[in-house]
Amino acid sequence: MSDYDQISKKARTARIVRKTVTYSLLTLWGIIVLFPFYWMILSSIKSYGSYNAEFTPKFITTEPTMQNYIDAFTKVNLGRYFLNTIVFTVVTTALMMLVIVFAAFAFSRLQFRGKNLVFTLFLSLMMIPSELVIITNFVTITNWGLRNTFTGLILPSVTSVFYIYLLKENFEQIPDDLYKAAKVDGTSDMKYLFKVMVPICSPTIVTVVILKVIECWNAYVWPRLITDDPKYFLVSNGISEIRENGFGRENIPAMMAAVVVISIPLIVLFLIFHKKIMAGVSRGGTKG
Image 1 (tube, rainbow, N blue to C red):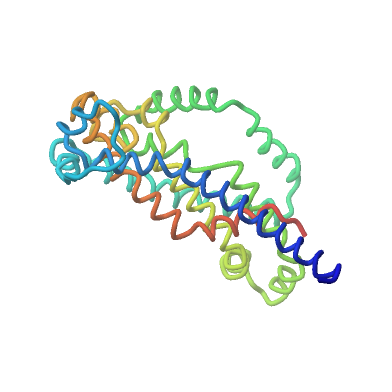
Image 2: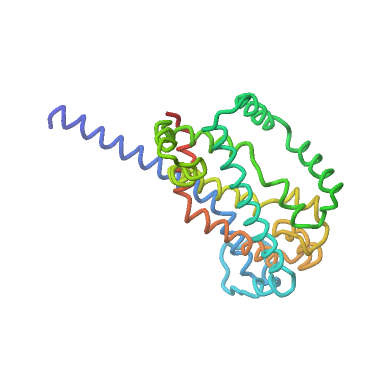
């Protein structure tokens, strides 16, 4: 065997070893990450009696049951929590997209006095701790008499400085020549925005929509502060209500069933659009 063949064989062996080690570590990490989801689903299909009878946890069950899922919708008001969350998520996301699209367009394309100063002040808002913002919003919403209303839930979440910045950076990547050509043809700013800029930046816009939906679906602190009426509870807050007044603290399988039901929409959403999310984030981080 020639020296070249020996070197080539060693290189192939080294590649195989690297790939084996890499995939082994990725598989181990995947198991660690996915195990809580597996345990959540496994616990949700165990009966209350069999779960409590396990002195040592079992990683499989021979007698699965769907009764916990039935109880999640019959013994507690999980359906109302779902409906409230859907209304909150859809309305909040739609309003926020209108605000950030127009704001990003103004900062990226329009020329007006003090634009850079205003945008700098906008960015400085990101340095304010969220706790201070929550306190201010709580006092404002309370003074306006909007506690225990969807308006009070939605209003503080209809804008985001970070998303405005992200979308502005994407809009600025579109060549100015397109905008100038459109203005020469008599195209209005609104028509240029929705016919040219929005379609070009659709990966980032889709990413922002998905991230906002996830944020709204998981919202906990603000809804917990501003609502104490179960009629306005979201799914994240409803979990606490379920634990206290629904199944009880000891009925872990029923609680896990409710958590699985609540988690499924976000998991499905992420699996469908994960490529869009990565594409949008990558585009937002590329300049030029």
